[in-house]
Image (cartoon, protein in one colour):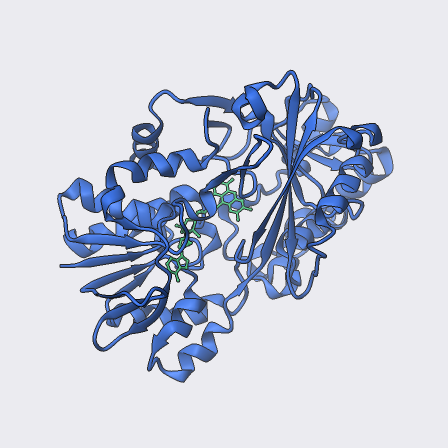
Length: 451
Ligand SMILES: Cc1cc2nc3c(=O)[nH]c(=O)nc-3n(C[C@H](O)[C@H](O)[C@H](O)COP(=O)(O)OP(=O)(O)OC[C@H]3O[C@@H](n4cnc5c(N)ncnc54)[C@H](O)[C@@H]3O)c2cc1C
């Protein structure tokens, strides 16, 4: 069985890593870029700063993935305690916001707590993500944080999103616990699966995938962009006119683009692929001369005084993320903003706007703008696969058709499931689809059983 894999991001590499482990030798990866890693790659800029494509934190749901990371990095990593905060009303509130509302000024605190006490309706009957928020968090928390923050991240109307993806992604609310936190002035910080995370000492997050790809490199063909698929003859054409035959095709490129590149695909599938919605992202990497004594890892920004929804103290992840490995001389802030047709951003201004946002939100003072040592912009055309109300119907039409043609579309945009679209999920989707095809096992990540 000849496997062709499109894309050398975590998912394509997961499939290849597992094929290799199983001793199946007839496979090849074709990757559009001249580097591996996809959205999980890292870039070294001309000034010596390393940047990820947005703050990448390693979640850990799978021993198999953890082992692959260990194979790739050896001892070359740091381990960090997660520390995330929300910047709001000119103060810092520990994340998760809803458990730490005691940090808010009194009127906002009262609004949040009374909203919780007056909760009405059941989350089960909420028709969309926006309604779900109202039934879970109440008007105060929704107004203060949930609504403005999610509008900034997703860049689409929240009424157009489903609630089905939520699970552990959004920390829900326990009123008794919140009231106890307020009464006992207690910080409530430990939540979620990622309280401790590993980060490569050298080369950013991308070092993980370079490490995984290294022993496989002879079968990874860079600068090969798939441009057309002939479903009947099982042929893939690449932009350099190379043509390859497959028995099984594992696709990790965006599913809507895959559909558009399949010759003679039913028009109804082309139409329904229009219901797959994504947003786009801009990462402003801003390096500074000076030191920054701030232990926070990443910070959320719901307010409109800054374009970004999240900023990472990226020098904290590894000292080698700054020039000379010298955090006594440099620090680096990675600012993530969303753009979409509903939320346009001026790419030519985003670096400047992010700098102004850093000042407005109190992360740096105006004089530090004079000490900027590096500006780096990463444009991400496909950033978040949005879990819209129409998504599952579109997937239910497209995926079975593709599988009937022996095309298995997996990964963040290949499967288009945000709820299982992180690095570990994407890697394991690649592993599990190989296991299903060779051993007949269930794909537990894609089906939602794990993750
Ligand atoms: C802003 C941001 C922050 C994130 N933060 C985190 C985080 O904190 N933790 C976490 O675990 N995950 C995070 N992620 C998610 C992580 O980046 C993805 O889970 C992961 O990269 C998905 O892997 P993938 O292989 O499915 O897709 P991708 O990484 O998108 O890889 C797909 C590959 O396919 C290639 N390709 C596309 N089209 C073609 C074509 N026509 N021909 C050939 N090749 C093609 C692409 O070049 C790419 O290399 C974040 C993502 C973003 C955008």
